[in-house]
Length: 216
Image (cartoon, rainbow, N blue to C red; front, side):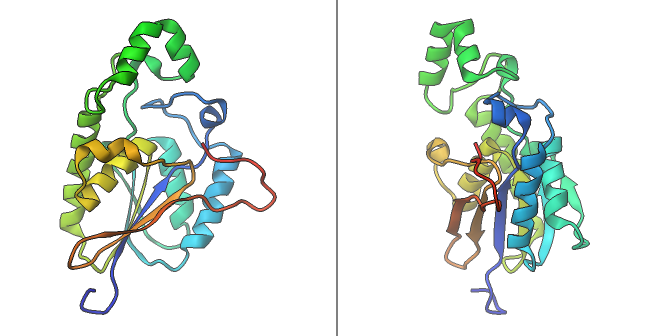
């Protein structure tokens, strides 16, 4: 524990739902904002996080992450600091397509790319896993230098960048990257301890009253 008896935490949030999430389309660096359900997801999560006392709030510079972060810290006085290193994978030529549409363009190429070692995976013209991990690690190193072990830090990003950040926070091998599911609107929490960080909560999606949908 820290000297004041309390461990600080990293709160990792995947942005709320967008119209493309609803349609099963690949985002990547395409800048698609939240839909109504995504905003309601973040309002519900904001109540869950009230009183956390964030020392800082960081977000990918894409609007679905920035918009989510602003809802989560509204009224707290904590500014949202954007960082392009927290962006989702660049999916190159697949951005805006569904998985089925990407596969239909060239089934053999799609199967080859999906079957590659995780560190070699990349959409045509997009990033591979190693490149994503490299830039998220840059963000992590900057943030870790700024914040002590007793501080609470909020990070709002994307499925890929949250996986990469978890690898950094827990010191996991890079090949563990794909072993974690990250839903839209989800909360994950990592706590700081002298002996190493602990994953306290993973991929919790708070229910929206009266809503029968599911984040994707």
